[in-house]
Amino acid sequence: MSLTIDQAPHREAGKPHGFTGGIAAMAEGKLYVLQHPFPLDGRVSSYPGSARGFSVVNSYLLTQPDAAMLIDTGFGKDEPAIRAEIESLIPHRQPLSLFPLRLNEFMSINNVATFAGHFNVETCYTSNIDAALWFDFGTENSRHILESMKVVAVTRADAIELGKHGRAIDVMQAPIRLIATRWLYDREIKTLYSSDLFTHVWRDTPAGPWIVTDDTDTTTPDELRSFMLNTRYWWLEGAPTDSIRRGIGEVFDKYDIETIAPGYGCILKGRKLVQKHYRMLDDFLKASDKSRMVSRYVTRDEER
Image (cartoon, rainbow, N blue to C red; front, top):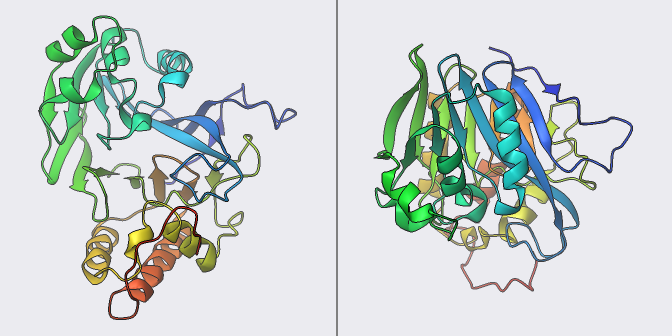
């Protein structure tokens, strides 16, 4: 199925600097991305210290006639806006499941307790069963809400079904990670939810655009390399990357991926573009292997 993009009405074309967040329909009635930008000013460790401009936090709402699932819950500062966006997209009291892909990241887990107390949350999928300990940020009655929430621990290779109409979501352990992280693959709309990888495209203004297509992409291999070596993946230079390459390659060999949907940063849309960014990443990992490079500690102040 090819994806189409239908930007929400409140993204006013005449006000490129006024966008503070909103909804983009990636597959009408199937997938919506709730996006909220944040500035890059040297304080965000997910990006190089010298990066300037804006990135965006992506929460993905998968919808079916009888159920919905939210992938990552966004930062607490955006909770009122995200809650209103979800309310505008699904019927009141429709069953909603939550799937925070990174248990240690605020932009992934910050609003779990709040949403569990507000929506009809049937299930929270995680890699750990003790969710109440991970998601308690001191909100009113949060511990009671979390302890009563149904938690399902998914394995490193699993599948879940959204609703009763056969929409299968494949779950996998992220083949490259620093913390407990899951990737998901949506079979119906051929989308890979890649959490904190493929997050390397950002913008000059908060207006975006936040969805990149082949005819708008200008990313170079040097830019990807610089991003990887100046963020949380700095340690890859001189690491045994062959096994990481095999793990990522198996994902791209197994699944027909038309869109890469990261937890933050621009979404990559189109099979040709997906292959381009996968190949650039693979080339970087190959060149970084310990057989070619020497591993060393790098401080945040040193950029490569």
